[in-house]
Length: 246
Image (cartoon, rainbow, N blue to C red):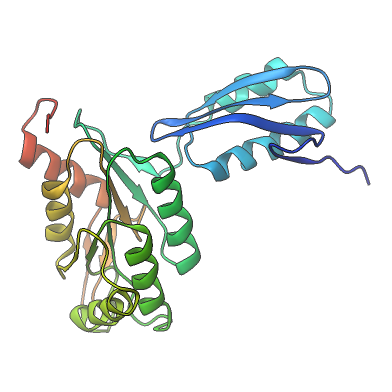
């Protein structure tokens, strides 16, 4: 079975150098045995460099022309709920991501930290009727990697939303609160609004845990809830219909 290697900054079959990660996407130069291919992706995050290199390496090995590979990769739109931007012209970045495990929260916060010009503010919670052990773990990760932490509800299901938040808070306290402090705001809509209110020029607001989901599950009901909609509403509430300034 043929093996094609790929990586970042490594002299393998297909590798990337000059990687630049921005909230709007990632650019890099892909080196192949034939040519150097400059790429500008609509996807952001260093992990998407690896994903796109893997696709490029396989396609190249199968004989797909490099021009076709480049065009295809650069046309790939952002994935709903995966570092999805909410943009109303404000001078800070708002991202919605599905990260709902310790590993995924750590990865996405590290990604945000990598291109943040200002602070990183994170809004997140943990689901009810799920592994309770990850709650303090995620609180500790947020405290370590974010500047401001806002703990809120996710899908509490049959559990008490405030009790879940307090378990997350225990992890924040154990790790040591972040530089900008932390808040417990059980109502997710209010938590998102507070993060938008606190954001300053150059900051990144990460709203994590639900991503593409359009609902919130409580003990006795399921209601419509979309982090992207709520972020857009909060931005409009703060700035009106025009572009914002700090």
